Figure 1 (cartoon, one colour):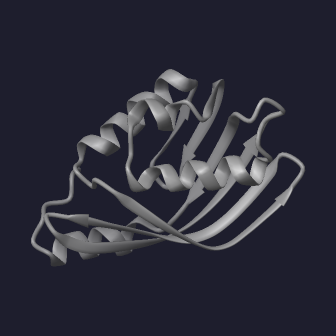
Figure 2 (tube, one colour; figure 1 turned 90 degrees about the horizontal axis):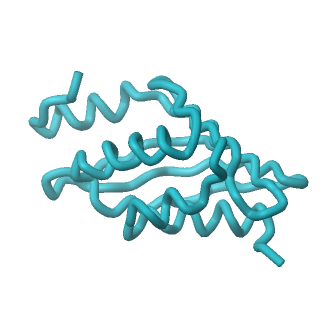
Length: 133
């Protein structure tokens, strides 16, 4: 028996504390869709792998996600939290909301992530870093 959808999402979010690409991608079904808030939509596990690899290459390293609230109903899990990470040794944070669909096999089939990109770009620029365009 696989974990409950809530536990799948909690394990997925916790995996960002020591992010390993294969482990993160392993949470997704083959036809999964990742809707990355204000950025773009990634369809299929290959596209999700490419996006996560690009994010990890940016050098965020560990991301601690403080979950403020999480609700689950059937295969749907919704969370609100704060991402905390460091760039060049400087701390940054980002308020996020996520909606996940988890199938009967315990795989994430849809991840909708919502956040306002401006506060984080403001933090990055104030710290003296160039925001990628």
